[in-house]
Length: 395
Image (cartoon, rainbow, N blue to C red; front, side):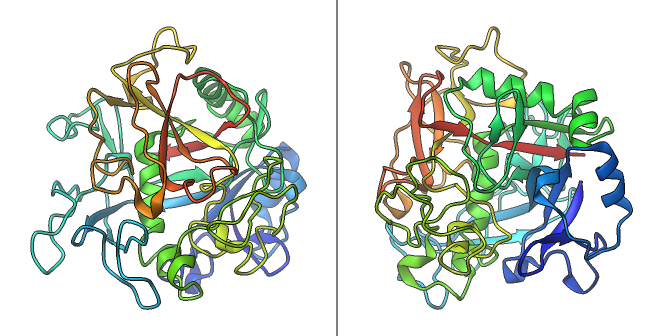
């Protein structure tokens, strides 16, 4: 992958050593971004190019954003208030307390305060890779690997299901079952195909369809001082991520507010300050887009291992999905385990026996109900309003 920064008009190669915070600075809502290059010869040229070299988006097939490993805890019922934000409530939630930690730290608290000072921190299972990470008593099993963070695609998946990309201002891939998204991501962006077509190599990485807990890791970081909630350019209701309200399912678009009405055009591009960047998880160009509006996003979370209409036969390895056995969520997954259900008034429809698979984020036409904390059930089949995104883990 090539580290990148925005130079004001285009993406450019960043200094991977992050000298003087030149690549990322999470205190200023600048999350680390990277790209993969589709042509091997151009890939080699970019790898040896000097920092500051312009990256032509026509050469890129994936844009990715880094979520560093952290522990979180939620103050009171709705989080704590940052200057410029509304008083915390279910419709205007406050911030998570978040601290970045290394792989030797795995905290097991409840994820909620019990007193007046930060306490009971929990390190989400999204930062663990293995078949038994979601259960606290088995997370320390030798088969599991603690992760320094996760890469998440910057936009919904674009291109074609047979040639997956994640790029701005492109039509998202839709009408695919859970298994179609999962199998195509796995086959295309790992192993020999991952090396030849995306430049990924080595044995210690895995690219896969995003899990519920990985979606939650992105959502909680956004709802902290390191994300859009902590960005001083946005006040009160505008702390919420702006919606992608374009009915044409183009990635990276913004309606310029959290509750913009449906539009038949892309009203604001992702690089437009405030009106466009407000649709990212940071309120800057360095965040993740399309988490609110655009299309519903299929995530790898299943009730009781139900295949139903997902197309799986059999289910994949457990490390690739979150298993739910009741109406209770998993801590850190942004459903209902931490009391985040209904944050910002987002819809909340938990999986059941008839609809055992999850979607997150919400479509463009679910005005005032779509949101990064929104979740809904699905049979697992494809639909014109269902897209997805990918995650990449390295250990």
